[in-house]
Image (cartoon, rainbow, N blue to C red):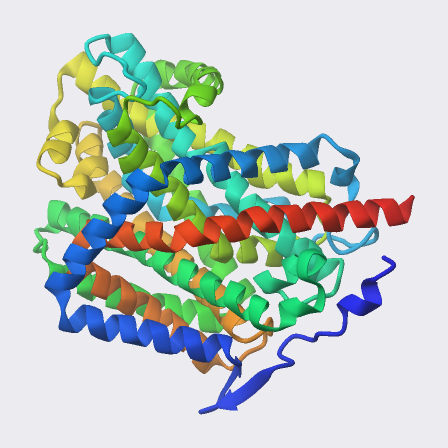
Length: 518
């Protein structure tokens, strides 16, 4: 690269200061930490006012800016597909001679566990059944066949290409500018083609501070969902009380496990847990596939994939939609949630993706997880819908009617053999996904707040891991699920613009390198 020397003018941790034994970036760490601590105190002192504010904020953002979230999501998908089908896909992350640091199974296990874990467990049964009962796109629920088709398409839409395109866009930007340009592994580095050296000043500080907020509150949403589902599962199996106190204790306990994992590091802790969880998830999915309506699931996999592609244009459009409840309550929330997760998942995927070509990277991060998502939703959601249609089993429907979504998975498993064993595996999966998400996010937030330094003092990782749990507790007590979702949307909204600009910067950087090689 002709300007590679200029890129190296900033070193990781260059503006860091020593503070109470911590090695932190000034002012990213200080502003982020103070703002989050203030949020925690306000939330604890005024829980009722916080709950009201969260509810109003979510309603306003989803109804006013639905168009923005939908357009941004479509941009990320088109950006990724463009790179796959152009010569830019031949560029290798880390240089022409770079070799991958992890095998395909280990690499994929870590990126998938970090990116989707808890959500697939929570929504894998709940969402298809909900959309089957109240289909989007104006479909009549009495038309059982069409409602079933649309329910699966809508569910896969939320967990397929768009979700992973958001992650892939961020991860690719970070990996390219870190491994190929030698810049710190922080989000500001990806904006060098647009802002030049100014990214090391306040424009970059603002980007990284927004990334810390988005990551922390996006993860808090998932931790709240995971705690609720684990609590419901323990109540279902062992009679553990379902209460805020139980959920708080679960968050504290699992955050403690995540802290141990994150101190152990990437290979010793996070990689090992991710691999274990992927095998457990595969075993549970295989169990449902074999003991459920096997032929229906296998046949519906290809049908669901085809219908998803066919319904993609209608689901990706916001103009003239009559299903505003679906658009605002589901799609807009999901896009904001994925966007708020993207700094954490993107940076984590970037760290483990050295040595892959851009094309290989996009295919594995975008296409392969989407295929597995289709199989997962076809297995769990298809089984639950079959139980409802063929056997008139109302167990999952009752969880929706009584607004106890945490029980949906366990109610579906109740109808299959060895329900106690499969439900126990489900609880373990939720907890370990909980841990892998928390420890991965702590590692990422710590890297951002340390100016790109990776070998930071353990106390810093402990600080961020602890505050993830504390923020989740505050949101849980200050409005429950609605509060958790509101903060994910609030942090995802401004960050969507940051990510769109990041795509422009990445395209510019890749084009410059491609031209320099020619």
